[in-house]
Image 1 (cartoon, rainbow, N blue to C red):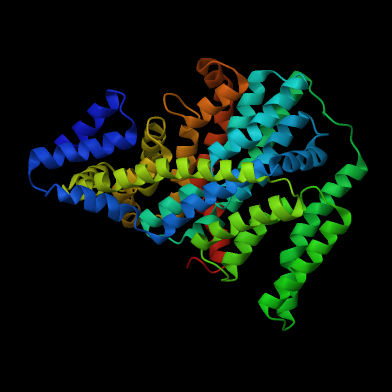
Image 2: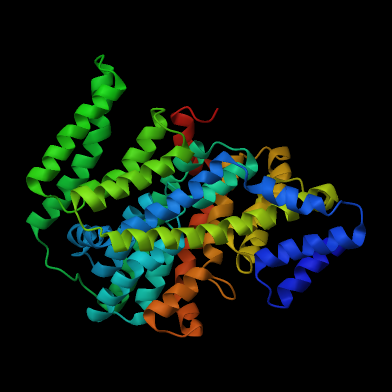
Length: 468
């Protein structure tokens, strides 16, 4: 056990990428200990990615890339400007609302930061906002990506923890809305303190159109529900509602109705049993292709090829982390390291709220040094047995772990969102880090609420019958 962990940490200290460090540390342990045949390394790494839920990984990544090249991020941004641009700190509020909408399609914080971040930071700087404020609000709002469904970390956690991915998706909705409210209040506080007003004139017409778009999107599931209550089959009801939606959108050429429909289609399709959470990733890709090629006609063959190759590159890196972490996690289990760590934690405390506090500190620390996917695959086998033994719901713990790791993305030394935004804003990593620090306050408040108020996470999936 000591050799395995020491090899991994030693390679990490030498600057080796985390995936290579996990695979290398595992190989060193296997070769030196002689207790495990070396062929097991290849077998377990292959077994780690032979999983149906992991098919969602490339498709969610592709969906996010397609949304970016199709110009849908610009439409989302324009919609958010119309909806909240007139408020105090207008473009800060736009930044947050835009991230909420985009998170319903991308599923990753990095895609949000890279996709909308470049538009939002430039616009805020052009309107006179300090660069540090623009970077801070963009970083904080990017954490919403994996909290709102769909979510790539939820897919990985659900596979590792044997938890319903659909329940995890639904569990993220209320926490995501709660985080959105906290961030908007934070923007309002900064705006009042600095005397910032709105960035566009209040216009009833623009606000009315934006509100109408939201109303149309919300009316879609209500219409389907109403028709099914009156004896119409769910498939026919959805078909009728979708035909009416398409007609309205083509007739009035709304800016963002179709983009706003993405999360409705994904969540509605899973709830009605049309597709599994894994298949929902394929539905997201098909929807992105429909918007880019048919509805908006903004997607070129060159852009499609670029999105495909970007997806291949990102998928390869993500799955290499998963496959390296799978052998490392397996060795942690077989060497009784995970059990020893769990026993040590339980010997220290068997009080759920104390354990959750310690788990938060541990995951926050790990998230600052290890990639999100790798951290999930390493920590779940260690912490989940304790979670189950203490009676904590694994779905709630999935939200806690994901939010902790999203906060870790904002920190040096390995916070990917930090480096993406530093490059976009042309700031040093040190200045970017200082810009993000004030935004940790609403994120920590949200984390504590999600940790100690289970209803925020569990009410919706329980109400819809996905949890007992």
